[in-house]
Image (cartoon, rainbow, N blue to C red; front, side):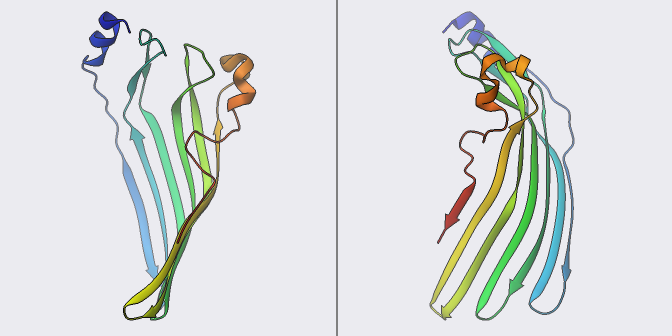
Length: 168
């Protein structure tokens, strides 16, 4: 690691100016059921990234985020649960491709369904399940930006983003 480059850039003051907002609503259909929807726009603070040798700096500006969902919720005496359809867009996700010294900015778009439910077996015992099923893809970079590594990244799932998560 080059301490002059690394330390000098690590503590350099940077400022960002952006607004985040959410618009949402719930509508009660009857005593036990409701529908809801929400749209949110936000940002992820910019960051500074180093190459694998710790000496080359890439400045990442604010990443824009957008999230929308619509769902149905049931709250009964024996069964409760919710199901939500969502779409999430995270623009300008910094991505290192292969063993290169360049950080490429990609968009991560996820579309899916989230669910959770509980069955009340007795006053002292219930069984619950929840999960997410989604399709998440990296998009937005050209083959020229990524060189021969383009096929390895564009259209693929972002690291540590499973398409299916189930919990019991």
